[in-house]
Length: 77
Image (cartoon, rainbow, N blue to C red; front, side, top):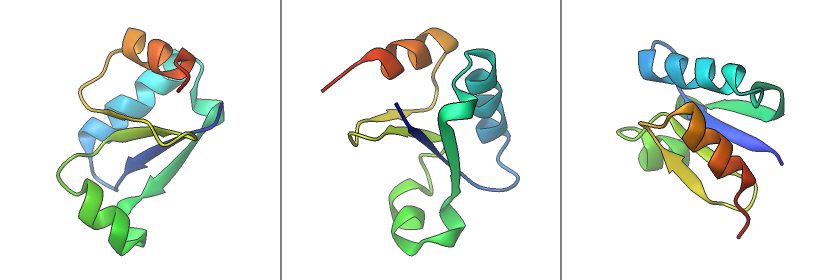
């Protein structure tokens, strides 16, 4: 399953989220999108980042743990 991490430069929480994705082995299946590159993303995520989104549109807001990431990745809608 493909994941998207909404992030931006200089966001220490986003760096922590990426570290958890690496720790759980999900980083290879995750695209990082900088919210500054898209006005809609900026409006939607500016105060919520980091946010992880599955390809089915489900989102996981920070804070999340490695266990939360694994469970989120295994869920199906």
